[in-house]
Length: 226
Image 1 (cartoon, rainbow, N blue to C red):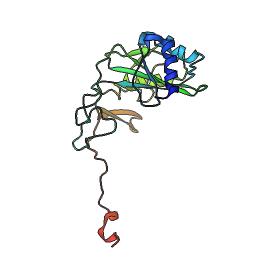
Image 2 (tube, rainbow, N blue to C red; image 1 turned 60 degrees about the vertical axis):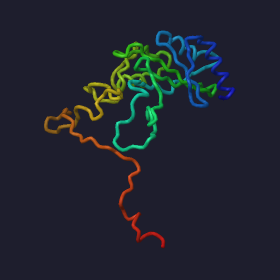
Image 3 (tube, rainbow, N blue to C red; image 1 turned 180 degrees about the horizontal axis):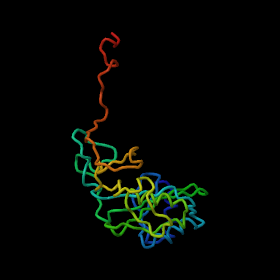
């Protein structure tokens, strides 16, 4: 880990105290966990402290830790390793025994050219919720709507918390790991009735195998150099 990252970590730890728990990150990155009950003062400090000055919120990502590190992709033919696989063939992998849902905040200090990641867990896994940070970073408005839409995380104090990606009448949250992968209904515009109609989904489950060699003229033996 570079001296620059360690120096920044020391400043953040000194400002936030024991409430900020540093967690493992890839080389060159810095990441902390914060408790939900004290996140707003802590994030405000990260923005306003002259030695930190994280003026910009880059993104808010929802995370669902259901079965994290316990299950693999459900495929019939796959390699022993894969990008984003929770566990591998040897049984090694991550684990998570805490709350199910979290929000991850990506912060950028434009003036100091520094970045930090802050993760905050929702204390209630049945009805996940967190305080809104719209009053700290106005751009959080759409980010929080996206996390609400896809993960069902409610952000208290948000001025207009409604869906942003799915249809108005959509039921459920698509990025939850317990959401049906093929869906329940599909929508289309019916010109006869002049509106969008919902119908039972008609999809056939497919297994996609990567790197399929197709039988075409590129592999014709007659075209190879003798």
